[in-house]
Amino acid sequence: MNISFENPDKVNGLLTITVEEADFKDSVEKTLKEYRKKANVPGFRPGQAPMGMIKRQFGASVRYDAVNKFVGEQLYKYIKDNNIQMLGEPLPSDKQQEPADIEKPAPYTFVFDIAVAPEFSINLDGRNKIDYYTIKADDKLVDEQVEMYQSRAGKYEKAEEYDAEQNDLLKGDLRELDADGNTKEGGITVESAVLMPSYIKVDEQKDLFKGAKLGDIITFNPRKAYPEGEAEISSLLKIDREQAKTLESNFSYQITEIQRFKKAELNQELFDQVFGEGAVKSEEEFRNKIVEGLKPQLETNSDYKFMLDVRTYCENKVGELTWPDALLKRIMLLNNKDKGEDFVEKNYAESIKQLEWHLIKEQLVKANDIKVDDADIKAAAVEMARMQFAQYGMTNVPDEYVENYAGELLKKREAVDNFVERAIDVKLAAAIKKTVTLNEKEVTLDEFNEMMK
Image (cartoon, rainbow, N blue to C red; front, side, top):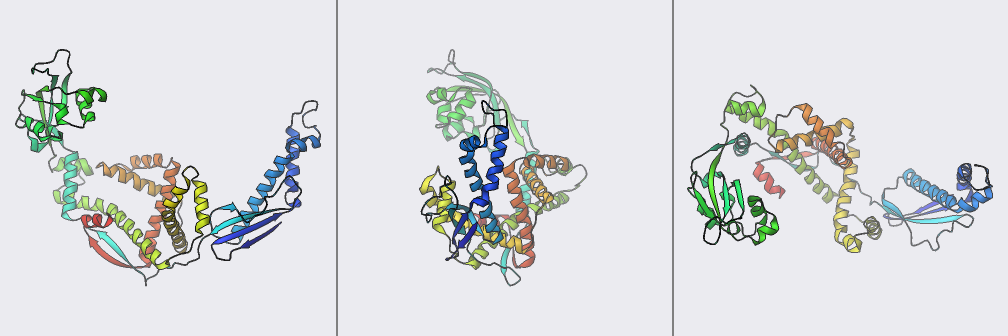
């Protein structure tokens, strides 16, 4: 066997491997002997068929597999041993004038195009100054959180008169009317139909409910109330969408119940419900506890923005790189056969941008000796679980439930890959924050969100 590698422009590599008969002969003979042991040939006892017959039947395919396996193993071993940073997979080269004919005796020559990563070096130290935005939990943000908890713990109470400002919910009996305004015989009837007039899209129909009281009968037209809302009409009247498309009738709606949502009082009952019995005993403590709970989430947001800024800083520091564009496009097309060349041309620039950051990040991870283990991956899953619970206002979820949910997330292969990347990002952000000089700036959440648009 002989392997040579040419890399004149540093990014387009040409690897040539010549295979001799001795490189794969033993493998072929061993495999054919295994075939013979298992072969069930008429007229011969199992394992006693003539080797010549086995070779005629299976020799070509066994030889082909043995050569390909040997070439693949040696190719990747050479790339690893010589520290070639290959991008994608090796591709058969157009420079190979004739394909190897494995049915003929060796030697066989194979030529591969190798996409090689551009050479660059990125080092970060105290001389590098990068912005870091600390998000403060100001009164506005805490007020929003307090109101969110009050709303989640709130409930509907009965009222006597409809108030549009309160977004009251109505229950009542719907009856389809005929052209004369009488209840239509055999028409649509829905008892205890739920209606929120504040969500009616046309003011003329919405205003019909102003000041309505228990027992009042309102005549309105669902088609006019929801001009393009087959979904709303079919849901309200319990009919299918096709029927809703052609429905033009007026309906009477007799109000049997008015419900008004009332937020929970800011009292000990709410404090206990949110943070556990006795954990908080005053509004001041409640607000302080909210700030304490917001800090990890806000720091996560700050670190995410920081890593975006690190990426931009490093990309600018590295400068413009040279890529094996033609070869990378071939690889991209091979991996997206069903999408075609237009897809490659449209998405190539973005893929290179992502590839560049991947290579930069690899160097940063290596320089900072970042390693993640199962505990780090689980921590990332637990963090995600807590964030998902928090989205529903559940901030005091027992650890057991959080960890069980994290365990379910970890059962998905794609999720595990994301958690690995998340664990790396967390450790990398922490390391870089200690390495570079931080240009610290304090911002509100609104200011931060405006920057992230």
